[in-house]
Length: 237
Image 1: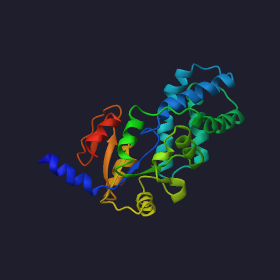
Image 2: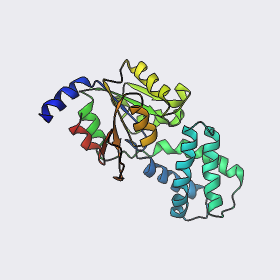
Image 3: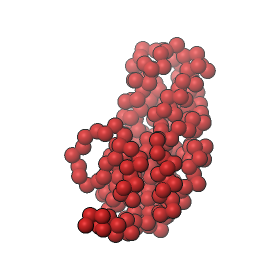
Image 4: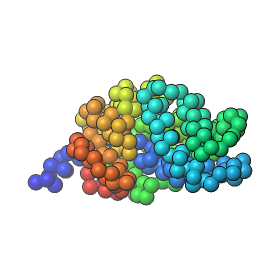
């Protein structure tokens, strides 16, 4: 009986919206490789792993502020580096921090590791659905990430929060994406890693969601599907 229900449920779905960073594109790995390159080029006398350990939660908090429209893109880029160096008591000129923040963005798309199963999943989904991207990432680098990682060809519409003027989980982003893709909430699915921005944001707009829960964290909400490997999505779509 469940198999029959799932069959008819799948028949209703026509559009799949993906987040990019931390969902398909392995942001942490690619970011770490970028910092490794920058540290060598600028001869920064810090243990890279010490820097990354402090940087990760600081960056996470800055992105939360950015999503909430509390800081600018420029403040995010500068502040996350400045705060990390301060936490490590490493004295560094503001001019170098500004250079690092700009070079980081330029170098980042040259590293293009994808999560395991990305290509297989997209190959499976593309003949069945129209695929799209909704991302809060910076517009100037997201297209490069898609192009250089070889997955741009899978997607019809690419929606950046900067093109909308607000960021996920703001409902305006999802409404804009649905309109641009000529989709409805009822015939769409959202797949992403960020519970607040991707999953709850989509659910609040009536869009069913799949949470890519890479580290298999425990959450109590039962309003969405949770997977820890991308290929698990195939059983639902």
